[in-house]
Image (cartoon, rainbow over all chains, first blue to last red; front, side, top):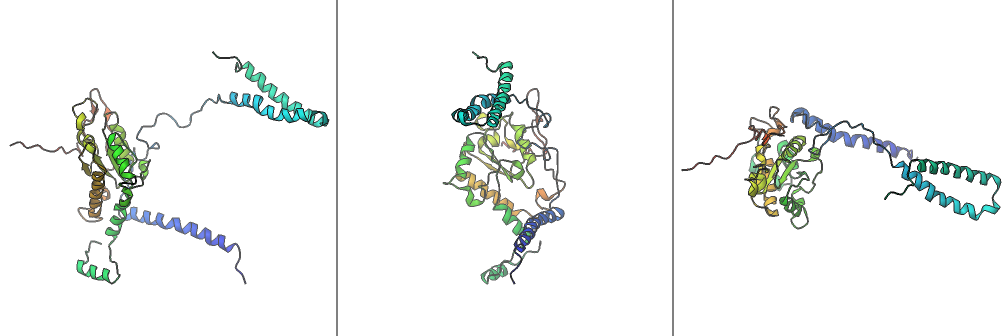
Length: 124
Length: 207
């Protein structure tokens, strides 16, 4: 009779539980009997590079990079889809034509948005 | 644990393939052969420290090759170079953030006393003003052999530390502080200008 093929996983889980527990338990015993814990303000500080941390960690960043993402979609990704569309234009069913028009419309909306934000005006 | 086994009996047993040791020896043997230094260089001495860690001098032979970028994982702080007054609070804070037991090597003339910049306005006149130093290495900069020698001296010190008893190691003493006050910038100098709890200046006796 062959052993259960899942027995290996059970053994593996057991080993994975026992092996980390032994050094942790030894460390706990060591701390309990020999080494007194010495916590402190600096030792418990979150930042650990010698410099005092300033301000809160939960701050918001302004994500201005999305404009580049929009322009990249309009002028680069759109071209990737437009070229096969133009090649296969004569043989396309109506549904595909409408789908690509919706896709173009969405991107044109982005173009209008970027234009109104002043992204397309040349900076000298 | 404190009971010492007779040396002759021990070597006799060792010859028969029986290794007798104590908790303390095992603990110190493990500690002294895996000293992890803090990856932390300040000036030209850091170049020598890098050379010590590299293949020609190879501090890995002594178990000290694991330079840790985080003080949480480091046992040893090698103060390698000139400590400016701007940098001193950071060094003390890094020392405070290291877990016990922790050791300090003052590498080079600058870390010991300020070195050639001792008369300057911006250089700390020795890191031992703020944190306790275990081994001092003279030199400007010390050669890698000198750092290895300091490392071996530190290993010897660790090997001699006691786990129990009246003169047990400092880090095992609950009354011994693990953190030292971080100096701040005052009007003219760092305040306080020295931590009197650890600063024991050498007495010069002139006759």
